[in-house]
Image (cartoon, rainbow, N blue to C red; front, side, top):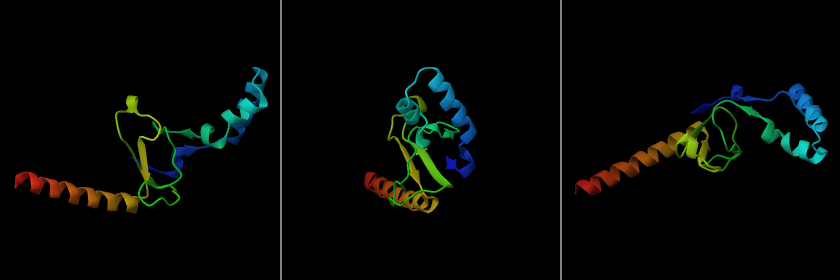
Length: 110
């Protein structure tokens, strides 16, 4: 899945409205701040469950656009089962994986 900047929508006015509503419902300031932390309040399209800040392959900081893949079916995804990569790192990983698969095929056919 390609992840672009538009996939991350953050609305400050909506956050302020939600803050007020939660306080009115009896939440403590600490509970509200935890809930509304930038990481947990970002509205994300799709099924991102574990927003990564570092590339799976190179370990450097990520910026969109980038590539994200789930490691299992959506309903089974747990935190940490998604991998997030720079486009170039993904390309390098695909090349390496393809080489490994071809080597295994050759060994199986021998």
